[in-house]
Length: 77
Image 1: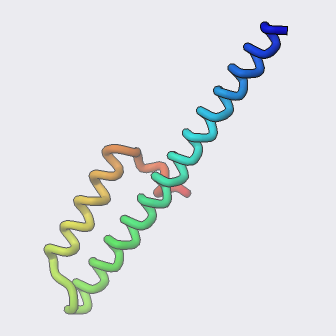
Image 2: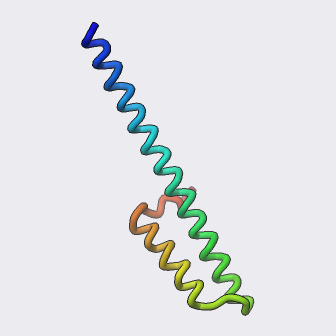
Image 3: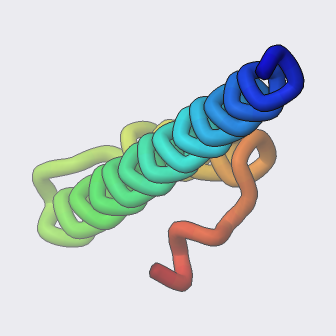
């Protein structure tokens, strides 16, 4: 009986770990999408004359930092 409980506990732990990883992946994709939207909005505002090159540069740096940390998978979603 102890062996069965140990295996069940291991499976549950594996499931929790996989679930946490999936949540982290989804959150990273959402954050990447938000940063991409921010870059687009900054660029659009700059082109229309109501934004600044500095805001666009900051948005691009934030996006590049996110890509360096989490990859660019969110760009294909």
